[in-house]
Image (cartoon, rainbow, N blue to C red; front, side, top):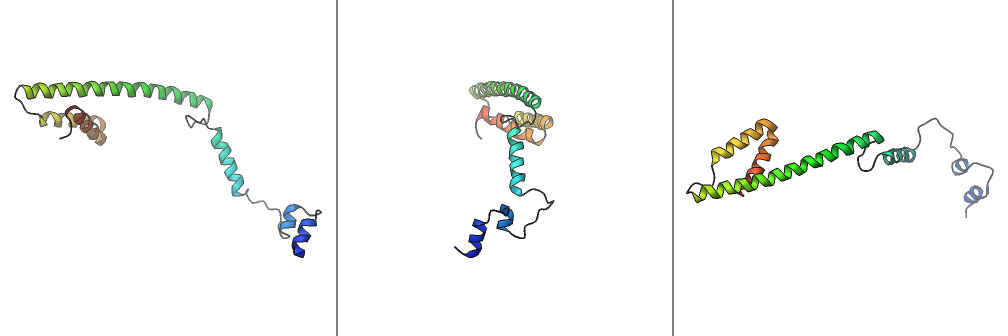
Length: 137
């Protein structure tokens, strides 16, 4: 051991910070990044894990809204499946009567209706619905 290291390890009169760095002075600077990180972690753990809310009442509201969203999603799924079955039946009936596989004017009408109601994303929704009923082109 060097003399400097021995002095630091055996000198118990000095505070630890002063022993490690004789020029260290107390400052009014903000806490170290580790302390800030600890505070951020504590704040994050205070959030409700399932909703991300910071207050219990907000978490309850979010849970209630999510429950309704889940109900709506199920209704959309059920309607999507019903629409797909009906659309397949229309196609089979049309083709069995000697008609065409597709009626592009009807598809265009559907795409336009969805675009008008939902904006640009409506086009994508309509195309997905049409594909689920008729299959890929």
